[in-house]
Image 1 (tube, rainbow, N blue to C red):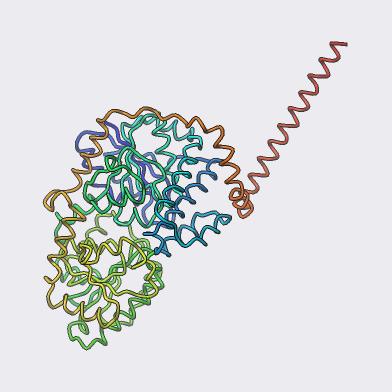
Image 2: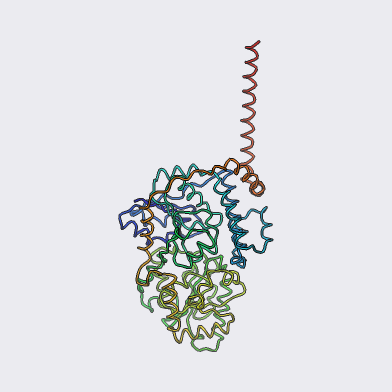
Length: 528
């Protein structure tokens, strides 16, 4: 069986490397392609070379171009914004603002004046926009590549990025009669990103919470959803430390091998690195001024997010005793050495503190207490996101959340004195959110089973374009025209291409008129 796995960018391999290895180990073929190559990310195409002996690498795949590409982007961006008018998501103002800023055409910014809509209205608007999406022609270049590769299954992840071009691949695969599955990469993907916009044959989710999200917010039928567990965390159940506490302390720059609290950084969307640095400084100073001897003496290790390291590079906490930052440069999170360092950081720490990051989940798997302090500057990306609330103990989570510095100091002090205080909550969360099929059952084989079952299922009948496309397409072009014109006007390169295209069409039209005139003159000359 051949699997074609299309990931948004190379760094997504960190979510699926174990699943790819499992599928290959079972004797199947995997080809990996990526939609984008982001220069600012520390993982590029070279990061995939370690797997070159097991899988084939297709590199960056072709994208749709031309007017229909712009029309598709406008429709998808509008769908993504409309979903944040849903009554459950309307309070996520930071997420809504991000979609507006990144992809929503300026001529449609007036939609932001609508505070919220009821769930039924949002669903109806999405259905209308989805019907328009289906009328857009399938991209011939993508169809050609799919026919050349001839996969039994096309896997796509995450599909829900803003105005995602990966929709074109699901639609092209359906036109070719190829089975399709969408893999949900992380715990927040179904609530803080865009809409799926297209219905694949299968959606692979972690747990029952994500199943409900896929049904409620993305309109996926329940029979097309498979709960597999979180395969990317399987390694955390199997590993052990790679160096002892003393060696680790020397490596990361801690002054001694005494107890330390680990601060885990978040992505730039959650906490811009400058704001994160300011927060950590205030936090450490509060610990030192707390009056609690344990907190006054505890060491602090700051581990920045691999893609949000900029302001940490110059060690902005060097003047704070007992505080170290490691690493201070962007790093490849799938590199074995970096993975070992991250694991050892969690393994040796006494407790973890963060703003809103998946590292909190990894800490829970290892049974470490995790605390956070609500901060006004991060209100939109802490309590303003749905996935953050899944970590609350009252929602089945494990996170100690404090509204004030005093409350946080008390909670963290209790965790240092009694690390077992959150152990039961950690175990409950892991059993429901990470390994819903049993804490002793790895998720990677379950993920592979679901993919291979899909590959053995009857192939879908190739999907034909809707019969109403000839009526719908002119309407789509008319509706998208203001956005197209606005985009061209603000993009000099696009405007130059449009003028060049118009000039080319004009020259062709003139040539046709001249040729037609010549034919008519010859006709009349012969007739007379």
